[in-house]
Length: 329
Image (cartoon, rainbow, N blue to C red; front, top):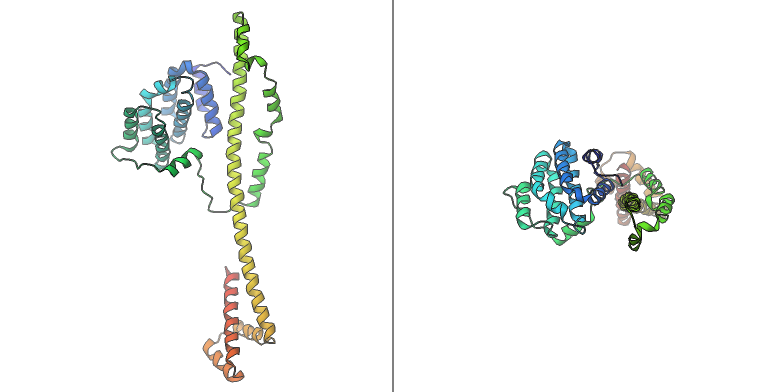
Protein backbone atom coordinates (compact mmCIF):
# COMPACT_ATOMS: atom_id res chain seq x y z
CA UNK A 1 0.00 0.00 0.00
CA UNK A 2 1.47 3.34 -1.05
CA UNK A 3 2.80 5.76 1.58
CA UNK A 4 0.67 8.70 2.65
CA UNK A 5 1.23 12.20 1.35
CA UNK A 6 -1.15 15.10 0.73
CA UNK A 7 -0.27 15.04 -2.96
CA UNK A 8 -1.10 11.33 -3.15
CA UNK A 9 -4.43 11.94 -1.39
CA UNK A 10 -5.30 14.82 -3.73
CA UNK A 11 -4.65 12.56 -6.71
CA UNK A 12 -6.81 9.78 -5.28
CA UNK A 13 -9.63 12.21 -4.52
CA UNK A 14 -9.48 13.56 -8.08
CA UNK A 15 -9.92 9.98 -9.35
CA UNK A 16 -12.73 9.14 -6.90
CA UNK A 17 -15.94 8.02 -8.60
CA UNK A 18 -19.45 7.39 -7.31
CA UNK A 19 -19.08 3.60 -7.53
CA UNK A 20 -19.09 1.54 -4.36
CA UNK A 21 -15.77 -0.03 -5.32
CA UNK A 22 -14.06 3.35 -5.71
CA UNK A 23 -15.39 4.69 -2.39
CA UNK A 24 -14.53 1.54 -0.43
CA UNK A 25 -11.04 1.22 -1.88
CA UNK A 26 -10.09 4.79 -0.98
CA UNK A 27 -11.79 4.43 2.41
CA UNK A 28 -9.62 1.41 3.25
CA UNK A 29 -6.50 3.33 2.20
CA UNK A 30 -7.45 6.26 4.44
CA UNK A 31 -8.23 4.01 7.41
CA UNK A 32 -4.87 2.32 6.95
CA UNK A 33 -3.25 5.77 7.26
CA UNK A 34 -5.48 6.87 10.17
CA UNK A 35 -2.48 8.27 12.07
CA UNK A 36 -2.63 11.09 9.47
CA UNK A 37 -6.34 11.68 10.12
CA UNK A 38 -6.00 15.45 10.66
CA UNK A 39 -4.24 16.28 7.37
CA UNK A 40 -6.55 13.78 5.62
CA UNK A 41 -9.64 15.64 6.82
CA UNK A 42 -8.05 18.99 5.90
CA UNK A 43 -7.31 17.86 2.34
CA UNK A 44 -10.74 16.22 2.09
CA UNK A 45 -12.53 19.45 3.01
CA UNK A 46 -10.39 21.54 0.66
CA UNK A 47 -10.94 19.21 -2.29
CA UNK A 48 -14.66 18.95 -1.50
CA UNK A 49 -15.09 22.70 -1.97
CA UNK A 50 -13.11 22.61 -5.22
CA UNK A 51 -15.06 19.66 -6.65
CA UNK A 52 -17.80 20.04 -9.24
CA UNK A 53 -21.37 19.93 -7.85
CA UNK A 54 -22.06 16.47 -9.29
CA UNK A 55 -19.05 15.03 -7.36
CA UNK A 56 -19.60 16.64 -3.96
CA UNK A 57 -22.03 13.97 -2.71
CA UNK A 58 -19.39 11.29 -3.38
CA UNK A 59 -17.02 13.07 -0.96
CA UNK A 60 -19.63 12.76 1.78
CA UNK A 61 -20.17 9.09 0.92
CA UNK A 62 -16.43 8.64 1.40
CA UNK A 63 -16.51 10.45 4.76
CA UNK A 64 -19.46 8.29 5.84
CA UNK A 65 -17.61 5.09 4.93
CA UNK A 66 -14.43 6.20 6.70
CA UNK A 67 -16.21 7.39 9.86
CA UNK A 68 -18.29 4.23 10.29
CA UNK A 69 -15.64 1.64 9.37
CA UNK A 70 -12.79 3.25 11.30
CA UNK A 71 -14.57 3.18 14.68
CA UNK A 72 -13.37 -0.34 15.40
CA UNK A 73 -9.74 0.77 15.12
CA UNK A 74 -9.99 4.12 16.83
CA UNK A 75 -11.92 7.39 17.17
CA UNK A 76 -9.50 9.52 15.13
CA UNK A 77 -11.69 10.13 12.08
CA UNK A 78 -14.95 10.53 14.01
CA UNK A 79 -13.24 13.17 16.16
CA UNK A 80 -11.39 15.00 13.36
CA UNK A 81 -14.39 15.11 10.98
CA UNK A 82 -16.67 16.56 13.69
CA UNK A 83 -15.46 20.22 13.41
CA UNK A 84 -15.89 20.33 9.61
CA UNK A 85 -18.76 17.96 8.86
CA UNK A 86 -21.54 20.47 9.64
CA UNK A 87 -20.14 23.08 7.24
CA UNK A 88 -19.53 20.34 4.70
CA UNK A 89 -23.20 19.31 4.87
CA UNK A 90 -24.27 22.93 4.54
CA UNK A 91 -21.94 23.48 1.57
CA UNK A 92 -23.06 20.36 -0.33
CA UNK A 93 -26.72 21.08 0.42
CA UNK A 94 -26.44 24.60 -0.99
CA UNK A 95 -24.52 23.50 -4.10
CA UNK A 96 -26.70 20.56 -5.18
CA UNK A 97 -30.32 19.73 -6.04
CA UNK A 98 -33.19 18.23 -4.03
CA UNK A 99 -32.32 14.68 -5.05
CA UNK A 100 -28.87 15.08 -3.54
CA UNK A 101 -30.39 16.46 -0.33
CA UNK A 102 -32.44 13.29 0.02
CA UNK A 103 -29.24 11.22 -0.09
CA UNK A 104 -27.71 13.50 2.53
CA UNK A 105 -30.80 12.97 4.66
CA UNK A 106 -30.32 9.22 4.46
CA UNK A 107 -26.72 9.50 5.63
CA UNK A 108 -27.78 11.75 8.49
CA UNK A 109 -30.57 9.35 9.51
CA UNK A 110 -28.14 6.43 9.63
CA UNK A 111 -25.71 8.45 11.77
CA UNK A 112 -28.55 9.31 14.13
CA UNK A 113 -29.79 5.71 14.36
CA UNK A 114 -26.27 4.38 14.98
CA UNK A 115 -25.27 7.21 17.33
CA UNK A 116 -22.22 8.06 15.24
CA UNK A 117 -22.14 11.60 16.73
CA UNK A 118 -23.44 13.24 19.87
CA UNK A 119 -26.91 14.81 19.81
CA UNK A 120 -25.60 18.38 19.59
CA UNK A 121 -23.64 17.59 16.39
CA UNK A 122 -26.62 15.74 14.92
CA UNK A 123 -28.87 18.73 15.64
CA UNK A 124 -26.42 21.04 13.87
CA UNK A 125 -26.38 18.69 10.87
CA UNK A 126 -30.18 18.70 10.77
CA UNK A 127 -30.20 22.48 10.89
CA UNK A 128 -27.62 22.66 8.09
CA UNK A 129 -29.64 20.30 5.90
CA UNK A 130 -33.26 21.13 6.69
CA UNK A 131 -33.17 24.59 8.21
CA UNK A 132 -36.31 25.11 10.31
CA UNK A 133 -38.14 22.24 8.58
CA UNK A 134 -38.27 19.09 10.68
CA UNK A 135 -37.67 15.85 8.78
CA UNK A 136 -40.25 13.11 9.16
CA UNK A 137 -39.31 10.11 11.27
CA UNK A 138 -38.46 7.16 9.06
CA UNK A 139 -40.33 3.89 9.40
CA UNK A 140 -38.60 0.57 10.05
CA UNK A 141 -39.27 -0.49 6.45
CA UNK A 142 -37.62 2.68 5.09
CA UNK A 143 -34.57 2.06 7.28
CA UNK A 144 -34.18 -1.50 5.98
CA UNK A 145 -34.47 -0.30 2.39
CA UNK A 146 -31.81 2.37 2.94
CA UNK A 147 -29.44 -0.18 4.44
CA UNK A 148 -29.78 -2.45 1.42
CA UNK A 149 -29.66 0.07 -1.39
CA UNK A 150 -26.79 2.09 -2.88
CA UNK A 151 -27.11 5.22 -4.97
CA UNK A 152 -29.26 3.45 -7.47
CA UNK A 153 -32.95 2.74 -6.95
CA UNK A 154 -34.21 -0.72 -6.12
CA UNK A 155 -37.46 -0.37 -8.02
CA UNK A 156 -38.12 -2.24 -11.20
CA UNK A 157 -37.59 -0.25 -14.40
CA UNK A 158 -40.69 0.95 -16.20
CA UNK A 159 -39.54 -0.60 -19.48
CA UNK A 160 -38.53 -4.27 -19.71
CA UNK A 161 -34.88 -4.93 -20.56
CA UNK A 162 -34.00 -5.91 -24.10
CA UNK A 163 -32.63 -9.38 -24.80
CA UNK A 164 -29.32 -7.88 -25.96
CA UNK A 165 -28.95 -6.03 -22.64
CA UNK A 166 -29.42 -9.29 -20.74
CA UNK A 167 -26.84 -11.05 -22.91
CA UNK A 168 -24.31 -8.27 -22.33
CA UNK A 169 -24.92 -8.30 -18.57
CA UNK A 170 -24.37 -12.07 -18.47
CA UNK A 171 -21.22 -11.76 -20.56
CA UNK A 172 -19.84 -9.09 -18.22
CA UNK A 173 -20.22 -11.49 -15.29
CA UNK A 174 -18.08 -14.07 -17.08
CA UNK A 175 -15.06 -11.92 -16.09
CA UNK A 176 -16.35 -11.15 -12.58
CA UNK A 177 -14.04 -10.91 -9.57
CA UNK A 178 -15.27 -14.14 -8.01
CA UNK A 179 -13.93 -16.05 -11.00
CA UNK A 180 -10.53 -14.33 -11.15
CA UNK A 181 -8.24 -17.32 -10.69
CA UNK A 182 -5.09 -15.16 -10.88
CA UNK A 183 -6.12 -13.06 -7.89
CA UNK A 184 -7.20 -16.16 -6.00
CA UNK A 185 -3.72 -17.57 -6.50
CA UNK A 186 -2.06 -14.33 -5.38
CA UNK A 187 -4.13 -14.27 -2.19
CA UNK A 188 -3.45 -17.95 -1.52
CA UNK A 189 0.27 -17.30 -2.04
CA UNK A 190 0.52 -14.47 0.48
CA UNK A 191 3.43 -15.16 2.86
CA UNK A 192 2.55 -16.66 6.19
CA UNK A 193 4.16 -13.66 7.92
CA UNK A 194 1.20 -11.42 6.98
CA UNK A 195 -1.31 -13.93 8.38
CA UNK A 196 0.21 -15.13 11.65
CA UNK A 197 0.46 -12.54 14.41
CA UNK A 198 2.61 -14.88 16.48
CA UNK A 199 5.44 -14.50 13.95
CA UNK A 200 5.89 -10.86 15.00
CA UNK A 201 8.00 -12.14 17.89
CA UNK A 202 10.63 -13.24 15.39
CA UNK A 203 11.36 -9.67 14.28
CA UNK A 204 14.81 -8.91 15.62
CA UNK A 205 15.86 -5.72 13.82
CA UNK A 206 14.54 -2.66 12.05
CA UNK A 207 15.25 -4.02 8.59
CA UNK A 208 13.14 -7.15 9.08
CA UNK A 209 10.38 -5.03 10.62
CA UNK A 210 10.29 -2.68 7.63
CA UNK A 211 10.31 -5.64 5.25
CA UNK A 212 7.31 -7.17 7.03
CA UNK A 213 5.54 -3.81 7.06
CA UNK A 214 5.94 -3.56 3.28
CA UNK A 215 4.58 -7.09 2.85
CA UNK A 216 1.56 -6.28 5.02
CA UNK A 217 0.86 -3.06 3.11
CA UNK A 218 0.98 -4.88 -0.24
CA UNK A 219 -1.34 -7.59 1.08
CA UNK A 220 -3.80 -4.99 2.43
CA UNK A 221 -3.90 -3.21 -0.92
CA UNK A 222 -4.48 -6.47 -2.79
CA UNK A 223 -7.31 -7.47 -0.45
CA UNK A 224 -8.84 -3.98 -0.46
CA UNK A 225 -8.91 -3.92 -4.25
CA UNK A 226 -10.38 -7.42 -4.44
CA UNK A 227 -12.97 -6.60 -1.79
CA UNK A 228 -14.05 -3.56 -3.83
CA UNK A 229 -14.35 -5.68 -6.97
CA UNK A 230 -16.45 -8.26 -5.12
CA UNK A 231 -18.74 -5.52 -3.79
CA UNK A 232 -19.19 -4.20 -7.33
CA UNK A 233 -19.92 -7.73 -8.57
CA UNK A 234 -22.63 -8.14 -5.92
CA UNK A 235 -24.27 -4.93 -7.15
CA UNK A 236 -24.07 -6.17 -10.76
CA UNK A 237 -25.65 -9.50 -9.83
CA UNK A 238 -28.48 -7.77 -7.95
CA UNK A 239 -29.13 -5.59 -10.98
CA UNK A 240 -29.11 -8.62 -13.28
CA UNK A 241 -31.58 -10.39 -10.97
CA UNK A 242 -33.96 -7.43 -11.27
CA UNK A 243 -33.54 -7.36 -15.05
CA UNK A 244 -34.29 -11.08 -15.36
CA UNK A 245 -37.36 -10.75 -13.12
CA UNK A 246 -38.70 -7.87 -15.24
CA UNK A 247 -37.95 -9.72 -18.47
CA UNK A 248 -39.71 -12.88 -17.23
CA UNK A 249 -42.72 -10.88 -16.03
CA UNK A 250 -43.12 -9.16 -19.40
CA UNK A 251 -42.78 -12.46 -21.27
CA UNK A 252 -45.52 -14.00 -19.12
CA UNK A 253 -47.79 -11.02 -19.77
CA UNK A 254 -47.18 -11.24 -23.52
CA UNK A 255 -47.85 -14.99 -23.49
CA UNK A 256 -51.13 -14.51 -21.60
CA UNK A 257 -52.21 -11.87 -24.13
CA UNK A 258 -51.43 -14.16 -27.09
CA UNK A 259 -53.27 -17.07 -25.49
CA UNK A 260 -56.32 -14.84 -24.96
CA UNK A 261 -56.31 -13.80 -28.62
CA UNK A 262 -55.99 -17.42 -29.72
CA UNK A 263 -58.93 -18.39 -27.53
CA UNK A 264 -61.12 -15.71 -29.14
CA UNK A 265 -60.13 -16.83 -32.63
CA UNK A 266 -60.95 -20.44 -31.82
CA UNK A 267 -64.37 -19.39 -30.51
CA UNK A 268 -65.14 -17.58 -33.77
CA UNK A 269 -64.02 -20.59 -35.82
CA UNK A 270 -66.17 -22.93 -33.74
CA UNK A 271 -69.20 -20.69 -34.26
CA UNK A 272 -68.56 -20.53 -37.98
CA UNK A 273 -68.45 -24.32 -38.32
CA UNK A 274 -71.55 -24.92 -36.16
CA UNK A 275 -73.72 -22.61 -38.30
CA UNK A 276 -72.56 -23.99 -41.67
CA UNK A 277 -70.52 -20.95 -42.55
CA UNK A 278 -73.43 -18.47 -42.40
CA UNK A 279 -71.94 -16.59 -39.44
CA UNK A 280 -68.50 -16.25 -41.09
CA UNK A 281 -70.12 -14.87 -44.28
CA UNK A 282 -72.16 -12.44 -42.18
CA UNK A 283 -69.04 -11.33 -40.28
CA UNK A 284 -67.23 -10.71 -43.57
CA UNK A 285 -70.24 -8.75 -44.77
CA UNK A 286 -70.21 -6.59 -41.64
CA UNK A 287 -66.49 -5.90 -41.86
CA UNK A 288 -66.66 -4.82 -45.53
CA UNK A 289 -69.94 -2.88 -45.70
CA UNK A 290 -71.00 -0.01 -43.46
CA UNK A 291 -74.58 -0.82 -42.48
CA UNK A 292 -76.74 -0.10 -39.48
CA UNK A 293 -76.59 -3.04 -37.12
CA UNK A 294 -80.23 -2.79 -35.98
CA UNK A 295 -81.45 -2.88 -39.61
CA UNK A 296 -79.39 -5.99 -40.19
CA UNK A 297 -80.90 -7.62 -37.08
CA UNK A 298 -84.40 -7.04 -38.53
CA UNK A 299 -83.33 -8.34 -41.92
CA UNK A 300 -81.87 -11.53 -40.47
CA UNK A 301 -84.90 -12.08 -38.24
CA UNK A 302 -87.37 -11.68 -41.11
CA UNK A 303 -85.30 -13.87 -43.40
CA UNK A 304 -84.67 -16.76 -41.04
CA UNK A 305 -87.46 -16.16 -38.48
CA UNK A 306 -85.03 -17.48 -35.86
CA UNK A 307 -84.16 -15.47 -32.74
CA UNK A 308 -81.37 -17.90 -31.87
CA UNK A 309 -79.61 -17.06 -35.10
CA UNK A 310 -79.78 -13.33 -34.36
CA UNK A 311 -78.30 -13.92 -30.89
CA UNK A 312 -75.57 -16.06 -32.44
CA UNK A 313 -74.90 -13.38 -35.03
CA UNK A 314 -74.62 -10.66 -32.39
CA UNK A 315 -72.22 -12.78 -30.32
CA UNK A 316 -70.01 -13.38 -33.35
CA UNK A 317 -70.02 -9.69 -34.22
CA UNK A 318 -68.95 -8.80 -30.66
CA UNK A 319 -66.09 -11.31 -30.81
CA UNK A 320 -64.82 -9.98 -34.14
CA UNK A 321 -64.99 -6.42 -32.83
CA UNK A 322 -62.81 -7.44 -29.87
CA UNK A 323 -60.35 -9.21 -32.15
CA UNK A 324 -60.10 -6.19 -34.47
CA UNK A 325 -59.45 -3.95 -31.48
CA UNK A 326 -56.69 -6.24 -30.18
CA UNK A 327 -54.87 -6.39 -33.50
CA UNK A 328 -55.08 -2.61 -33.93
CA UNK A 329 -53.27 -2.12 -30.58
